[in-house]
Length: 90
Image (tube, rainbow, N blue to C red; front, top):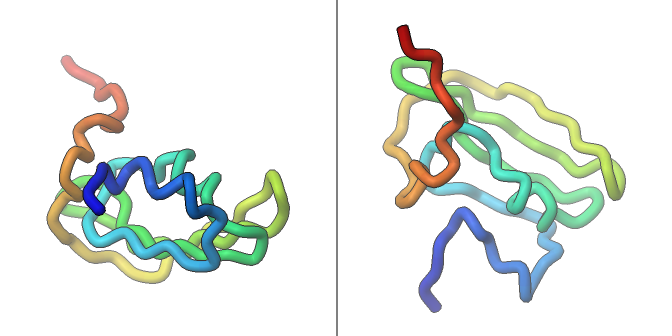
């Protein structure tokens, strides 16, 4: 199977665990929505030189908790530019 990792795999959701193998500028709501209640996601979020590895837990149908585990730098996930937030420009 081939697809865009940012979209997840909605047909087989919800998942107990999601591990994102590359960094992202922000956590996509589409991935968070695919977590089962009680499910966990590990994802590296941010921009060089300061990225944070986060543990995201779904605590209820509409609630999530986030814990920053450590700082790191890893390559961007393919097609992550599709979710780049607007940046301030002088």
